[in-house]
Every structure is written in C-alpha cells, then in structure tokens.
Image (tube, rainbow, N blue to C red; front, side):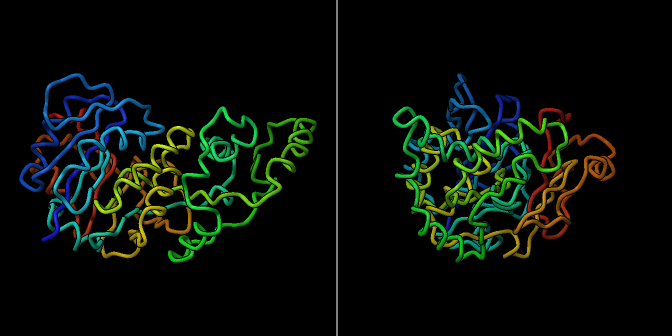
Length: 319
C-alpha cells in the first residue's frame, strides 16, 4: 500500500503551531516533518530552513538530506495554515488526489505570466528572474541550463492542456493603471521592444500552499527548486515549474472529485481556476462566527469532498 509523508511549510516561525499540527495529523500520518525558518529548538521532526517566504521552494533542497532518506512513495506539502479534510491520511492520499506513485499534484492556477497584467506585484520580478542572465551575464545563476528547454517544456504543458501566449504584449506592462506619465511609458516601450522581442519562457502562476511530489522525482524537483530560489523566482511560479518539469503526469483539482476552499478578498482567474472555491474573508466570518476551541471542532467543519480549508491561523485559535 502506498504511503505518503506529510511535510508542513511555515512562512514564518510559529513554534506554537508545531505540537498542534502534530496532534491534528499524528493519528493519520506516521511521518510528519515541519520546515521552519531559523528554528533552533530540539523537536526531532523539525528541519531548520533559511529563506524568505517569497521563495519557500528553497526550503525543500535544504531539507532534502532528511526527506530523501524516508521510506515513502510521495510527499504531501501543505502550509501550516492549510487544514486537510480528516479523511485524508497517508494511505488515502493516492485515492483522494488520484495520484499514482510517480505523479505530482498542483491544486489550481490563474494563468501564465504572459497573460497576466504586469501590475500584479510578482509578475515583473518573475519575468526578470528568467531574463537577468541576459543583462548581468555571469553574476546570476544560469537557470535555463537547469530547466527543460522551451520546446520540451511547452510539450509538457500541452499534455496538461496548458497553452501560453508566445509573447508578452506591451499592454500587460501597465495594465489599467493611469498613474504612469506618458513620456515614461514611451521610454519603457523602447526598452520593452528589446527586452521582450523573443518568445518568453512560459511561467505558470499556481496556488502553492498544497502540492504533491513523488519520491521517485523528489531529487529532480528539489534541484529545480534550488535553481529557482537562486534566481529569485517567486514561489508561486517556481513550484508549478518544478512540479511540471519533474513529473510526467501532474493532477489538478479539476481532475478529481474534491475541491479545496480558500478565503481571500480578491479572486484570480486562470486556466485551472474554479471561482466557486475562492471565497471572501466576510464569508469566512459567516462560516466561523465563533472562535474554534478544539481540533475536533475544526475537523467537524468540513463539507463532503472538501479537500482543505485555507487559511486557518492556528496560532490565533484558542486550542
């Protein structure tokens, strides 16, 4: 029977969450590891990592010396504020997520950088991460020698019905903003024609607070995570790139009968986006009008086939 190791990713150091999460999942997963920034405690299942949350893909290669030695078939990575449906355990992951031993999983995406307004705060840094070698030459890592070439990666994307635009259009640079002076826009347009004249490497933006990596492909996944970390590629571009590059088959939420629920004030739309799962913070307050006071109460809140709830701030609960 296939086994899955649960790995918890912390954006920031919340030591108080560690024993709560161990209690929450301890009867469901025999192996639970926490990747905690700058941890200096003595809990044996906590791996100290050293990176900012914008590039938390860098946690994984730093933890590989422990994770790669584990006897398991897959790794289920979740954020410390993602709560899994109580039916999910180390043996049910493969059935619920419909992943085989060598498959990966990404929940959903909101499209490619080529299709998104570059007003979006992380789009320009992400594109720069792929282009900086053209400018700084030997002063930056050669990311393109460590990831699939453009044509091979486009073929991988095609298998998952993902088709990015070939070129970024100038209208994406400023989107709908009216705040940029027209003379400045003109100078940027001259620069733009040089910088973006060729087809861009397709960067898929994906919700990355939950994903699955197979043990068979873990080291390749980890390697790509490290080169994207060094290149300062934002994590929600880096994780889908690493998962899609290292696995022949990747499952999305739309491929299974389960759907996660996220609570945000903004709704991002993309090729694999299900707007029904993305709710506002006001809807969260309606669902949870009173503070949660026990883990049993937390588990009892799940609807049928609700994969996960995010975010649940355990450090703010009275548990």
